[in-house]
Image (cartoon, rainbow, N blue to C red):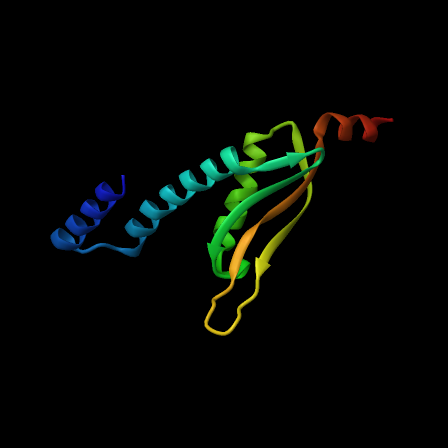
Length: 120
């Protein structure tokens, strides 16, 4: 897959140049696919709490799209749950280290129970 992307980028640059939009769309698709795999395979859930490990370089403010896509994908994969809050775990910048976004703690509850409590 990476070989195909690299070949495409080389051809795009060679033939007519490559706009940032083309590059961003290619990497956005790869990123969304990677995030979906992470949320599907590596999320730990106990009760009404889940942890999605991200382990990406940079602070959360450097990874806004990834954080928001992760939450969106979690919601899509769990339509029966409502996210009540989330907390981003990160390691701050330290000397030469740019910081690290470790993962997202997600608190949630069943939509069914939430709607029943609202009615009664």
